[in-house]
Length: 110
Ligand SMILES: [Zn+2]
Image (cartoon, rainbow, N blue to C red; front, side, top):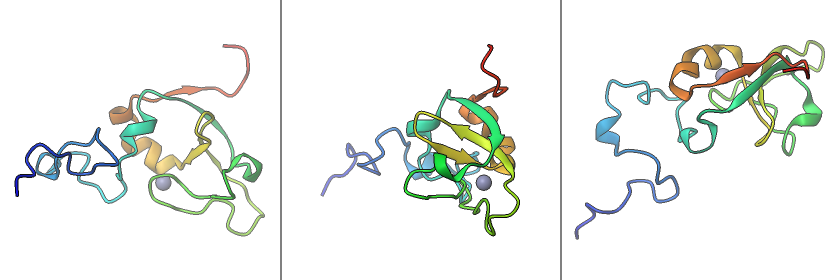
């Protein structure tokens, strides 16, 4: 059976074959195909707000760290408003160069 022309992940056709991941930034357990919807996005740095989550998914899109575990201290994080995705500060710093994110200050006057 010849699979050479099939994308390795049919549901994520933007991904290169795993052979090309070795020793690159993609070779990180947190990278799971987010390039398909998070490249070149404008993020907002704001305090975590549960009401902005989709179906109460209150975790970082990359490391799945839960924000607001005990509902007492909402921390600041990066938010992508179109897909309503949260990214923690650690993952933002680790991946910002690869995803070419820009950050809106959160104020409305840009
Ligand atoms: Zn994270």
